[in-house]
Image 1: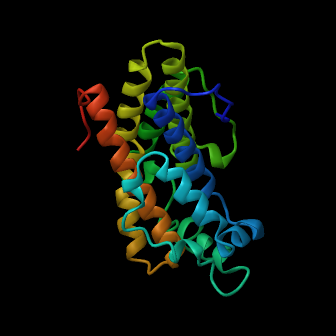
Image 2: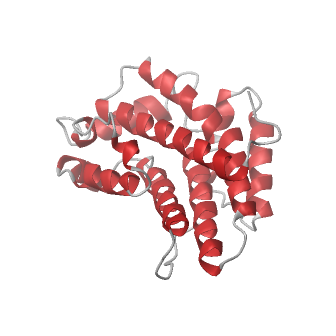
Length: 227
């Protein structure tokens, strides 16, 4: 699911699809375990600026009400981010308080993973055995949406029908990250998290809601939207 280089984009729809693809790719990277380089990018302001430029290229309204100070706050110590990431997302007596696997938010994880795998396989994609590539893990699901938006940009560029990729994005986002990321955000708020992680999840939640609205406008409402 790696981003490839598109030729020069001339249409607004192509550029928007490519910008959305880059946004999903960026969010997928931001939920990796934070190393020292990641912390340095936060403290220097580089990361906040990357987020600003990437989301702004999709729609400037996505930048409204953003807490840029939070996105520049990596804590006082070098290990603060990593310690907080572990506390929130990785450990706990009964599992982490804010798991990054969507199947843990609905009570039927195996069914959730099986459905996600069917989406991936339909587009010729397979997953490795890495825990990071569990079918319901946040990075896997965001990378899949990155791939679909990229393919949408490609077919728009070639003059073909983007409908199948738009409908796939609409359905997958609604049934998977769009369903459980709001629940992740609620759980996170209850944990008094570092401002950086609070704002990161908030940014993703807002982006998903914005993107789902756009996809419904372009592709119509899903036949069976989850509740």
